[in-house]
Length: 204
Image (tube, rainbow, N blue to C red; front, side):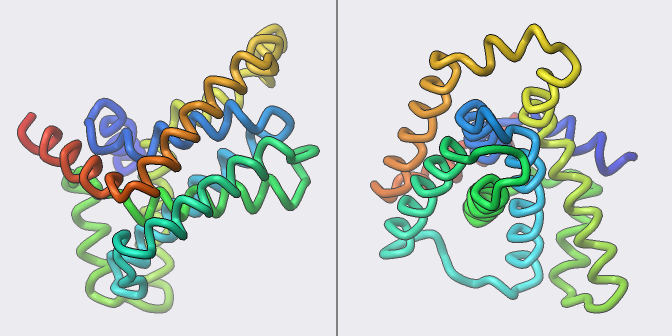
């Protein structure tokens, strides 16, 4: 619970926005499969963040990699928009790919719980210890992505809200944010944005 609450506490920290904003945008775009997309986004983000910390993923988000990342971001948003329902492979793929991209570029705002998880991952833990630290990473990420998950859950709890979230206006807002995200990636400025938000957060 403490790990989840630390993730929730990170919502208001600037560097978390680089992971959270694309999540909310993708949920708005994926009108027929919001919850699936949001859940798999969290899994993808946690998985790549953990593998980076463990040293299994060493590809930096720079050079030609930014063009690949931008193309994958566009593909994820298009797949989310075109997904036909919660069981659609497009929804699963959109969430996993977009979440992995977020984990690829995210500089976590380290608190004591997250710091412990990252340290354990960097020790190269395998077996049950590795699974445990990976699971804790997912718990933290779910807390940090709680606004996106709540947006995805809202129509199930409040059916009247579905009219707003199913509207073209909501999809347009999500699409515009997604386009800005892809352009920032393609321009090679996403790493700078992540770094600047991280500096803002660590100065606070």
